[in-house]
Length: 150
Image (tube, rainbow, N blue to C red; front, side):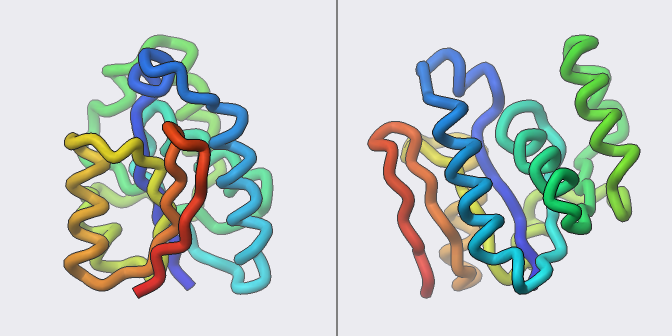
């Protein structure tokens, strides 16, 4: 099984007052549910949901592929977030220079932390639907999780 994450950046989580603890718990529960399938995990390693997922994968000892869209990604982060990211990158199975579309093409299942609004996460959710990929939708607005299995 190959599992990818998509979700909001940290500034959007904070700006909208989303409960990051609740979101983290939801991701953790999904990982516990599918841990038996030994998923190979993909994360874009942006701040926010991507790095939360990356840290959980490391904690669960699940193999993680860091799917970094461009070399300078870490330079756009403040020193604390960059260090957190670097710590995760030290533990990953592999680093690939690929974009979200690669993760969508190559995953079997996804986790989408999405508030329903347009933006980058919306674009990835649209790709998941177009490619008929199963995904867990964690909605931080209504605090509900849906299994969107096609």
